[in-house]
Image 1 (tube, rainbow, N blue to C red):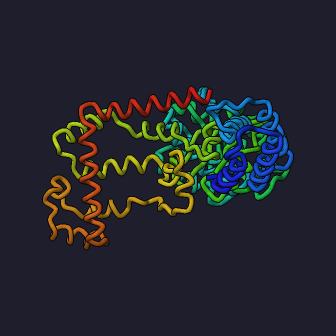
Image 2: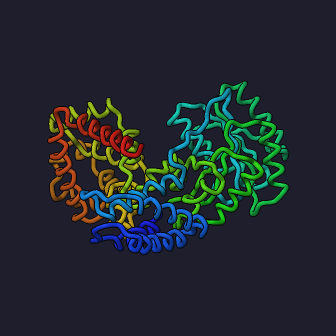
Image 3: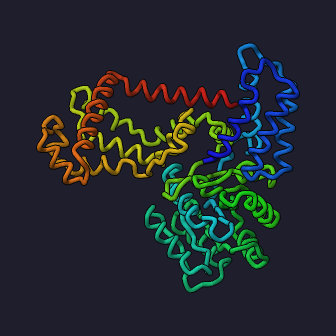
Amino acid sequence: MFESLSEKLEKSFKILKGQGHITEINVAETLKEVRKALLDADVSYKIAKQFTEQVKQQALGQNVLTAVSPGQLMVKIIRDDLAELMGGEKTDLNDKGKPAIILIAGLQGSGKTTFAAKLANYLKTKRGKNPLLVAGDVYRPAAIKQLQVLGEQINVEVYTEEDNKQPVKIAKRSINYAKDNGYNVVIVDTAGRLAIDDEMMDEISSIKKTINPQETLFVVDSMTGQDAVNTAKAFNDRLDYEGVILTKLDGDTRGGAALTIRSVVNKPIKFVGIGEKIEAIDVFHPDRMADRILGMGDVVSLVEKAQEQYDEEEARKLQKKIAKNQFDFNDFLSQIKQIKKMGNVKDLAGMIPGMGKAIKDTEIDDDAFRGIEAIISSMTSEEREYPKILNGSRRKRIARGSGTDIQEVNRLIKQFNDTSKMMKMMTGGGMKKAMGMMKNMKNKQGMMHR
């Protein structure tokens, strides 16, 4: 995510490295490189110029403290201005209503239908809502089926009228259906087109006028760069939507859309899609995104993802087993599954300060734990429960059964033993202390960014 932009911005800051103070000359040289980095990221020339002019005025007006280098000060100014450019603070989704109605709009191929299902899953699992998905795309043959398949995956009902080719009537009747059946959020998927046209705009405008949604969300493919910004403006001129959704932000995106949509349409980015999995959706935090662009990581989001998977009752049971030296491969496998639920492994690693640059050229398989899971699955229930019985012949059998070699099995057993020792050291309230430290870190980061 934003790897190219991050690398180019880092190079621009090196101009100030070793400089004793900020001058108009060294600031101008730095911002020339910053502007080039933004233009390469598909930010429009006008916005890139405005941004660097604003940074220049702030930098020249600052007195550099002895404890802060000019380079550090410039990073701080650019970080704050990047966050402001993307909206400053996160904007919550309005899901209040009886039911709350959310209308999804966008071009064909932007990921609207997938996002509708991701949003339903998010509202169901994170906010305790009872959502209804509505199949309002009556033109694309596979659209209804796609939404039904996604709905089945997350156990959310999909309202359809497969013989009805009038999206406005479908949307209107779906609201009555939701009221009669106890759904408190209705998410209406609509048809997209390959390009903006009057017919599409008239149809989506009619739907909005008829159902009067709390939120109209415009979904845009972030990989289309500046074109995404132009499309966002055209839709906003007709729909006056409440928020933007950026999909495919985990792809080979240069970041221009994320950086400039807010300043062009004056509407917040509310969510970003960061992968193909149904859970791969994040609330957009401008300040955290600015940190990631500048290679500072995103510890707060990492902590939040960990806390979502943290079950206090399970942790207590595990702590007792560790204290009694009974931690086994079943527990080890359970911990791996919790990590996998947190998201893409490379993306998680990139949230750790300094790690983004270290792993930028490293290929990390999204299913990096597959080999470990295969080895553990090839163990008998007795071997999982009592790892000490894993002698040489048992290890050879496990290697054959898992399609790995004996070295990989030995390496996993060593990792398991090292993990057991580390977790043993954390007994006696250590796990609770660790979570407490994570919460404090989250709170401190939040205070720093206010």
